[in-house]
Image (cartoon, rainbow over all chains, first blue to last red; front, side, top):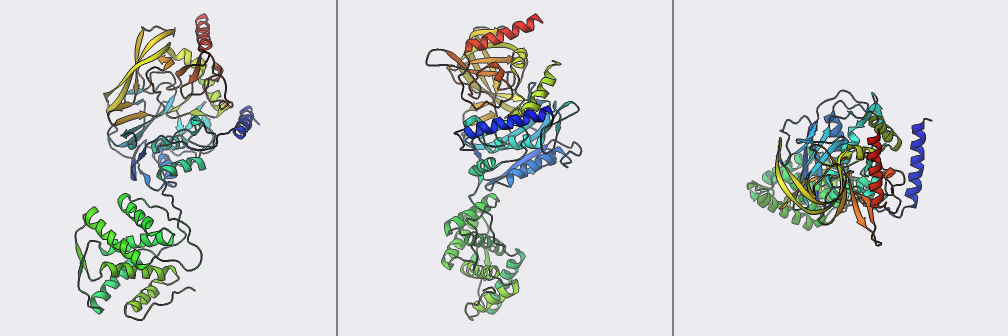
Length: 375
Length: 188
């Protein structure tokens, strides 16, 4: 064992004693401002750098990894990496930049500063810009594990430094400087810890988590319900002789959002929660988890009246929120919601696309509710 | 300067840590003193934020004015002003993560670097120490982030015992340590 390793081990031992005796274990700390829900575009302008120890082949790639690591744990807002961005670098321009430089927008870094992060906010709570500038006077790489040196100099791992700075960009503060004792990459000291901890993730989710969980139910691929809906239109038009009615939700929109609504309902969200989450996705493009794992057994579906309330609200949102043009369809809103949800009910209870379509059409043609395909 | 590089490296390996954020390698006490052009104790008597033009756009700077109580190194007038990147103008805030912030009436020790930097202090935020008067009327010293500073040997990479509650050192003790370090450097 080297002297350095002995020092490190004794440091860990002392820290363990200190942590064990601490009264403060509450966890993460936040800075009091956050981004609006949606996408946070980050212009990556660090360029290449060769193949690194962890397999990354560019600094932009390493930063993308850091961004995606955070993205894996947040719902309401997500980073969108723009590798190789050529946007002019600027501060106070409402554009997020990450790049290397020898100074920070004209100001010297100072001898000991590896990177500077700025946050711009409006009204103290609304984040509108974040820039991270890495000091190119230092030696940077990308690697996992303990802190390294190379060529007799410190070799700084850009991924862990970036993940820490991005945590600040999201709105997280240092837990250890706020009277708390937890294992966290957001602590004020970066070292051998090279990944997010449960506390870091809990902090990010407190700001951007939808409170949801990953659904355990797999919905059919979108082309299949789309095909069902086209057949439904033909059935209404050709067999039932239905006339056209005005609607603002196009067929694809009806299938997509009824599918999402159904996903939340079978994920045990109540009607209002399911509707709110679907509308949040429409507004932000960010998928939110369901409310709970669906229990084993027959998959529960919402009553028709609630589905219809959702469909009418969706129609209003398309008309008033999205300014969608009116269109016409032989399938009215009530028919759309009733039969699409029935199609999904059959699909999620063991029926193939063909079986589910046939069973729904049998219902429409007066043959009664058909049995599902799984007991 | 030659000694500082391996010292920094050893510190990094021993404590396996760099302070952030903004990500800064915490300077040792010696590095703070030797790196400072001016070291003084002052009280904040005013601050105001201004827009500045930068080579790549615009930014906000906060000008902080200090009434100087005591000068430990270099020279300073009775009143001096430092500029820190970041600040608030109206509804708009530019925050430089980790940049020290000041309130009128606060007393502080500042290790001021020469030249024009994002932070005018040695070691970004590490070159600022808070002065607080205890119930007995003794001035005591805390770090920029509010931790008790028990001794100058605690300055630098966070130590294993940094979470312990300790009595902050006296301002007079810090002054003696700084002046002693300056004398030592002068003797060399």
